[in-house]
Image 1 (tube, rainbow, N blue to C red):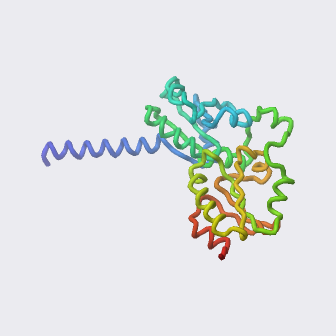
Image 2: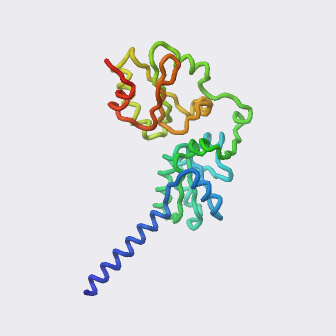
Length: 242
């Protein structure tokens, strides 16, 4: 075996080890594993990457807020200790996944993202710190249950689309639902509901992922459609006919 060939094999081995380490250092794990890892990790930094408004309503204990969508996100993470374990989360896991990637590019060596975010955290009834006055006084935020009941109890079947402006799959789904609304006018009514603007209703209905669609006929739930779906699949599922 020549020296050049031996050197090449050694270089490839080092590259494979580095790739494995990077995969281990930057990970996205289920909520239950995330909770366990938090409990077992010392000197960690827990970051809520949502907006200040979202953070004020509810957040994990001991979390700091660094808004991923803020203009100063990268500037603020530069002040953090790169040798400490970093845990990130958001509402559904999308923004924190992007934040994790930025952190890794900035040289952070141990970054853990929560899969499914606070929506899944709440689904498992894990504790949250609620500091917002509305949360303490049980003030309802957004669409009321009475208003929602009026929407779903009409003669025309209704497809409720729970979404959020920051949700990538929700943005992809919107033009599809707009087309369905137009093409099947009079046979279905598509109603988008932003879970941030209508937090109380979303909590009441236990919406734990987005996009999440519920199909109603005269107030009765006919089916749920979880996550992004192609137009053909939605039409077939709802059995829509022109």
